Length: 116
Length: 108
Image 1 (cartoon, helix red, strand yellow):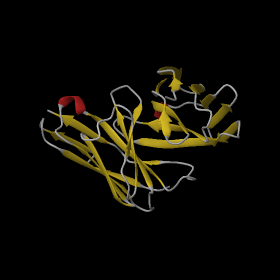
Image 2 (cartoon, rainbow over the protein chains, first blue to last red):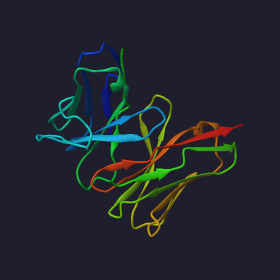
Image 3 (spheres, one colour):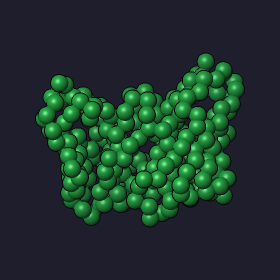
Image 4 (tube, each protein chain N blue to C red):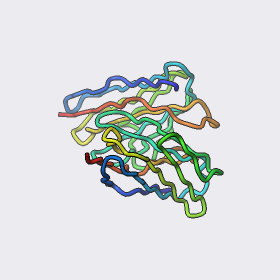
């Protein structure tokens, strides 16, 4: 199957700093990428949908200015957590699909963010 | 918004069958998925079913879909300790929505 690489796998940062997470489709072009957040023992919550070359669509309750998403190319989307706080600590997972008719989404391995 | 629900825990003995259930509300769902998540890892797609099908079998996995009741189930035959993980059902309408995940524990 297609491979989605997410980097870094884990990161620890200080409160107030910004962290960038990359999501790359390695062997296919992803027109649409999704960013999810997973709280401990809870489900994945969709944060935003990004389409290459256009602004991301954020889910209700997700702060656009805090979680900056850039989908600059068909193989790369980035999520930047700005001015991170301990409550932003979570497991962030991206997924990518080729197009509207794609049957499945391919997931990255996730990034565990800890803000201290 | 649309909702996907599944029970949080399931415990079975090694060799038994496991059945994980899921309900969803989005009637426009086109595909329904089962993902497996092992500790600290991303999601692994196990199987998926198109919304006009009612059953799909793939080795030890059987997916049943009752579209009228919006009910999806995953049956794992001859459950092994390596099957212990969290299983997420997901439905795809305009985007993908996930259930909370069912933690499957397999006892030897």
